[in-house]
Image (cartoon, rainbow, N blue to C red; front, top):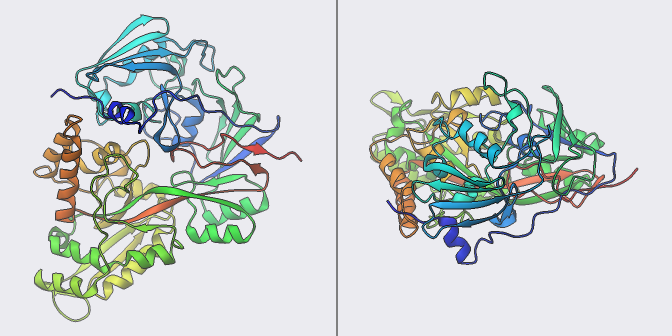
Length: 521
């Protein structure tokens, strides 16, 4: 099917400037070390493997274009570009004078080496432009043309991804082709890594505006209370973010009261996933509906999020491109929930039963994955007991969640959308499309007969029809209560008194050192 690029249309409408000025980098006194707290080790630094901490990889590797504030696409390793009218060819002028951290030049051959390494594997076919990539035409040392079989939707957003569309030096791999060491074009070089600390030093040959401080450290503090104490004591400078080291709203209030600067900005969506394959009771839409209506989103937003979260009725907040028509959040209505369970044949006082079996549901949560999720589960447990559902809570650590969720060892579980720049297609393909292996993130919904065809139509749509095709996916999810949107959550960052000029990152995959000023002394 002939398609045009969605982002091209957005740019023409004035919604997406294509070539703004390149963003400035951090400013601070020379010799300083900036210390970020992270909740888990940075791990594997191979940007093509979907394993390590993405914010750490962002320090080392760069994409062709950067995702800036508000979805602004900024030049990075590509200095300029031109997209054909049919969206099937993208001509790029690469940044001149750029070298990888080992001295290897960044040029058309280096770009081709990277594409040849990860495009043909099939591991990344969930990305439109990877699945539709045809070949790279080299026009000159720094001039290339990317040819696609069809025009990829969300092309420029996809080119800014942290994984896998980042470029590493050919010297990063061993003789057998396996990843060996982290060498990119970015402003930070990895000097050491352990389960407790990843250390970086400024790359003095960086082609852009270099950071103004010499060193950056990612300090592993798994316990949120430990991170808060370290921040107050001045042992770390910055922490927060949905994926780096989440801060709860209550923790943010405590930090504010202690005089610590806190920055809050719009985050991502929290969704409740059902697994009817493991718990047959959840195969009945009426039961899923009853659970959704038995949960008080407004109270949770106020009590657990101090009013910083918003009740959600849709898979994505309206700020996300192609988020579709916003559905009203399910209201907390215990009477309606009880009536639904009655109609489904689940009856009785206290915990309901049907055919001799009690209405029991296991809820898997991980505070390591989603800060405050244990407290939310306990509230949900009490609320669902009021309508006759026995909710048991199984708390797991980060590693256990990453094994249990893909194996579908849960009745219900919380999921977070992936956030910019992976919205909406990254989240949708990962969580909803059954043929795609989503790795440790697992699936929220599996329905090969009904949902997969809708997903295939959405990802193959033309610019003229994509809105309607994506809406068809949302409509089906809503009509079936295939998942339950719960909250649009805030992203919270905090920094100590040494730091000035902090700005939340454009995406949750960036380490926000840009613009920092570190006080002397």
